[in-house]
Image (cartoon, rainbow, N blue to C red; front, side):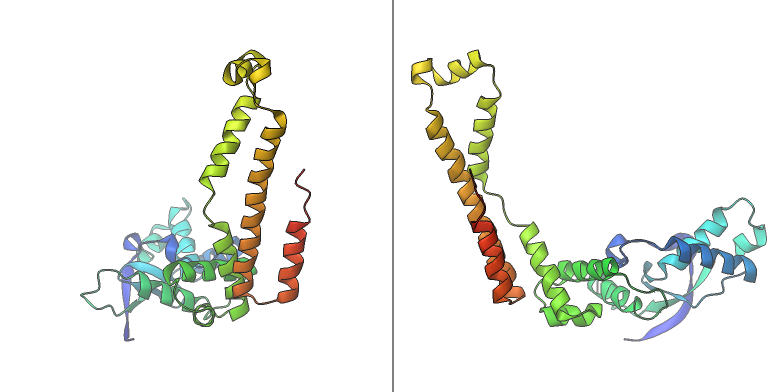
Length: 250
């Protein structure tokens, strides 16, 4: 990929969270960069990187520059100097109307080229962004893009899949009906169920609740199986299954 150095108007830079691969901004780093700008009286850093106008490298530096400009004590000449920032522009095919793929590739690579150490939360954020962009890539491909291990990428993928399991609409609906009747005043409960003699048998209601619980327990076991596919560990899988199956539902 060809690059060329250039400059960009600070006001025109697009900050898109999809390409911010840090879990959170490092306030200490921003403060240090703020001090560096003030001491030098100009932009003292390497160029930022943009894909078209979208920022993919330099989030902390840009935030520091904006804070310097916004501060009332900043001299007017320094504000003027920071209106234009040195940048490296990634060459983009003019026919490419969707730069998301290219932008994320460069954003992921940028985190391994500077001194801010990656936290575990940063690594997880990077893997999550990569999986969202490229769900069909293998764990090893995702790991290479994010500079993490393939086991870490596999773990994050499995956890995301468990978190997005579809809910059972019918059991939830039935459980909601039970909750609604249970919270009604006794007179209205009679109205829902008829006379005392013809109201639903509590044992039948208990069976219905237990059936719902069984279905949810089965869903947990299926989730464990999905997890096992991405992180094979028979002993851990068996331990989790036994833990779920051993829960006393009643």
